[in-house]
Image (cartoon, rainbow, N blue to C red; front, side, top):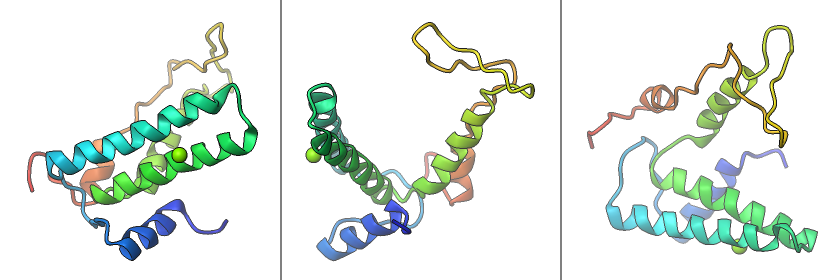
Length: 134
Ligand SMILES: [Mg+2]
């Protein structure tokens, strides 16, 4: 797949008349709650099939989570690709300059001394977000 999910989900939202904003902004509490519920439903479906499978069902539900997450971002006017790039930048700093990685007993990668937290607010401001404004 060459397109970002952002392009695909934008096409879907425009095709069926769902909201698409180009600048980050808070939306009505009703719409925000509705989007949150949609995402929670899809996340619950992932949890349901994570262990039992089958694998095609897990793949389907994972894609639903990503699709609904991108849709929720579009509804709020968030360029989610840019936010993911910032999360990735931050995650890569979990590896020290010497390449060393600290892990918890269960394998989770820990934040080392060189870890830089993601600046998501900065990303949204660059997209035109005015915190607390409309
Ligand atoms: Mg689903």
